[in-house]
Image (cartoon, rainbow, N blue to C red; front, side):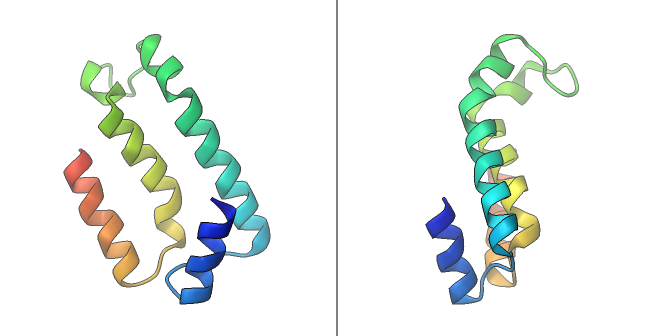
Length: 85
């Protein structure tokens, strides 16, 4: 994840410092790893079961990355978010 983010910063599609990249990478791993446990205990934000689906998990990860993206990359994440939700 760190190298992917660095590549995106280098390509001009992401604006993030090394410190932000490190924190973002750890948080993405945390959310992706523990989503199954979160879903298993049924703690959907609104109480609806559909909010613990894999698509919702994907959106949660995308929403962590989105604020750092620039231009077309941000538009793509917004479109993917609509598809996952």
